[in-house]
Amino acid sequence: MSLLELDNISTGYGHFQALFDINLRIDEGETHAVIGANGAGKSTLLRTICGLIRTDQEKVRFDGQAIGDLAPHKRVGLGISYVPEGRWVFPSLTVNENLLVGGHSRRTGLWTIDKAYETFPLLARLRKRQAYSLSGGEQQALAIARGLMSNPRLLLLDEVSLGLAPVVVEKIYESMPAIVDAGTTVLLVEQDVGQAIKFADRITCLLEGRQVLEGSPDEFSSEQIFAAYFGV
Ligand code: ATP
Image (cartoon, rainbow, N blue to C red; front, side):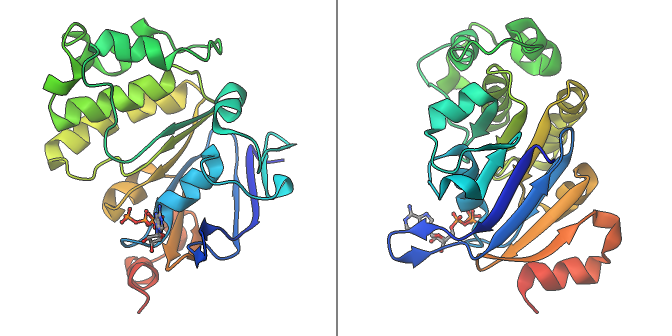
């Protein structure tokens, strides 16, 4: 049994269908990257897993439990943490306060404030700074660290590197091994295909809401990935 199982997911917004028959298995401890062009449905997929978009109960299973119609906060309680696109932090709260808020679910585990600072050393010296005054990269690090504070078994990260300078992206990715070593399963959306391939055990490519490629990155040539990404 995989940690996360999606069966024939077809969802969207009102009459607009954004995803078509998506099937996905993610094993515990795996790192999985979802790639695809703008509008391919990557964020919609993460929203479906975290519960912002509901499906039939049986279509999403987490650790064997059917959760497709479960509310987002209940999924946090089960160990699913979602870090949305756009580096959402509480701007007027300090770095430390943002992390405390992230721990409100009180799921116990390895992740504490100290462990978050150890994993993202750049945040440690900023602990008393209000979040609005951080750089984009620092805010992204804080958003991820806050997501970890709920001690997730599955961490969903949307658009990790969007809008960040390459050197900042490298810094964020330097912290990923510590997250994986802590036993956390990571499913991330990444527009930077090179970065996704470097990081992930498995990749899924979406094209206009359809899954056009899925597997280990070494199974595919860069031409195959390019063709799947652009639909050529
Ligand atoms: P991006 O990289 O641009 O964020 P994406 O792959 O994450 O793209 P989604 O955000 O999942 O794509 O969007 C998939 C489709 O659903 C797009 O056509 C988008 O316009 C549409 N869509 C997304 N959010 C909404 C919404 N709240 N209401 C209506 N349509 C939406």
